[in-house]
Length: 306
Image 1 (tube, helix red, strand yellow):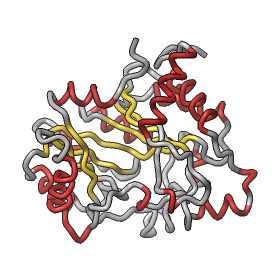
Image 2 (image 1 turned 60 degrees about the horizontal axis):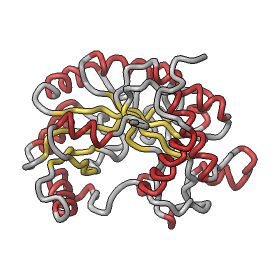
Image 3 (image 1 turned 180 degrees about the vertical axis):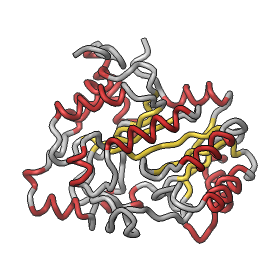
């Protein structure tokens, strides 16, 4: 029995071959940093936590992709690649600048598509017009950092956008035939397990294709880490077992066709303000799958139930 809709097989079927995302830091900033909608960025944010070593803006898009290809090609010589515009807000710039960055990536040999990470408040219609056309020739996936469906939480973490903006961006993008991915953080301050599980129900009502979940992590030097030091009672940091059980319940409430790409995020231990779990992503996934079998649970088992 399929426990959940896995990203790897879905992508291989869609592309007709094995593909790997290569992260790119294309030098963008964020409207939540430059004063357009806020300053200081999200309270949890430190892009060092997810950028590989080859993601350096001075190298340029082509060089980053070529170095990423070398990293993966040793193990998978026939691999194809998706250019993953990951760091900060990758739709935040003029249309001419964005076109130049995206099309440079697509000119790199063996790069067969784009994954564009952005914010829900940074997707103007002229850019969607362009991406809709581009998606007819290449695979294009837009990933939105939704993080939470609760405006109170979004305000507390200084996210700078609202749930209404998330819903609007998701619907406008999906209406163009572009697959939509979203990110959600589980365990943000002030959110109970009941609120978190309600997110699964709300998200299932939106036209999303892929979903990334990850646990709250406190990163050194961030405002959230400072808030935790000042008032730890405002936070609940899950144990591995607690988080696995929560994710299983979340999965069971999800619409069955949503593709699950990730359940956890693993920041370098040197950046963590509190101890991590000491598990690799695949080790966590093995524990999750084993627990799902033991509990006779699967994606969508409780979908549509009140």
